[in-house]
Image (cartoon, rainbow, N blue to C red; front, top):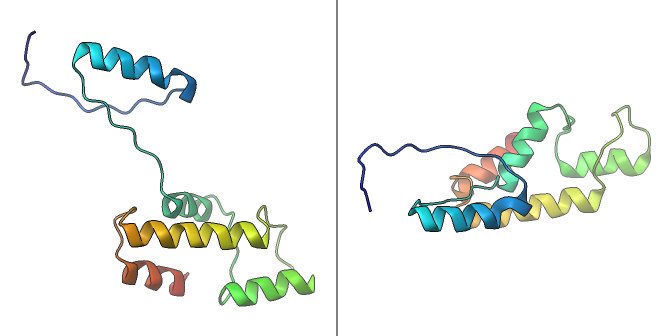
Length: 113
């Protein structure tokens, strides 16, 4: 087997159905394969960047507005349960170190958001 010192890191987007074939190919070629998935915090950041998040003083105020139906906010794509689930998932990921934030940094981010 030839060895080389010119190693390139690449990013490849492909259907999940083709992942097994890529794993087999990389194993036979001696390549190292690493998959990267977005954390819930990164997905939430994408939502902010895309304008799918609306301003409120906190979750309680947002939920109060949604429940009272007297809101001028555009329709939200998530239900209250979805938002709570995403926040809980992001909290769990932050505690385990996903997203490279400490729990204090995450709590600060949530408080200022």
